[in-house]
Length: 426
Image (cartoon, rainbow, N blue to C red):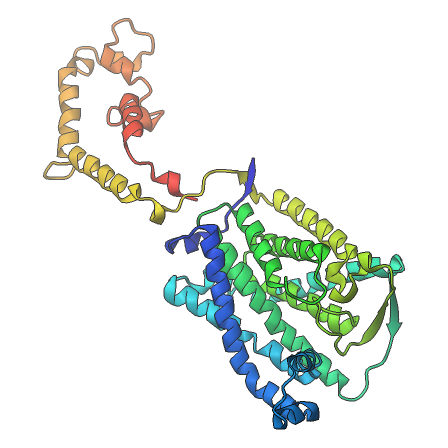
């Protein structure tokens, strides 16, 4: 049975106390809820301006006859500038997650994958990977005849909107990766294997999109597969920048390059347009977007298999072993104290090694004839007069673990009682 080797930045998170998987997911959900409230506060000014300009909404206000169905339709049909503003407000999730990890769990930013070294290169790597992956999925849709590609030219302020969506998705993609991978995946790995942590965080990621318009079984499966691919990528490159870039550029290319609905959201201004052929929803995903179709499933399975092969080649897979957090082990402290007591009893002399040296000296004194009466005995390998003491340590100088100061029998007895700290080195 193989498991994924835990990167050093994930090991650094072991300083915080771990929780069961259900509790970790509930904490992540609570963080998401608090972030949504903060995001709503930041969105209020933009929504207020939008609704005050809507005559139908104002007429409902003055007539005191609010129709919640109409209001919901207004929210779904909000203009592009409001959608761009909403994408930028998702920075609230990043702030809330970082504050929780720093203040409550005392985790450093590096444990969330925020590595400074090579961050620009890793981000560019993520952009290339994300664009290539979605390009492959779109190519499958076109080649199977489920999607018709059209070249259109953008005019007026559409270019400004496309640029706004680009930077907005940079924030939105990073926000979802910070909470699902930077926080949840790393937190789960403190108690569970990396493999299990990747899968659980991917399921949580899919659940966050469970209420989006047009979501179905295949869409949920693709979201989970996308989460697994992101989790493996996060572990492979050991930073948050590459996965944040993949997520962001995936959404941008889908919505603002090819003009496809992004996870059930309305179609946005795009460089090109795409017509979805009726009856081929199983391939192109229907109203949910490409993420709800078989084309994305094929690409994600292929990309994940390729990534696993690369990780195996780079030595990221090791024999599975139990994941133990010493902060959750009630015996950890007592075992350390017991080991310290044993060491103290062995070195009680005034100079720290007095007793051990006395024992060694007495042994030599009792067998002084080894060096005095027959000085050649120690040098002969097959001498019949070789005493028992010399025979017991005939390997002295070859194996330091079997010298008179550390006999093999003493080492074996010590290994049965002493605390092995290497057991907790994961």
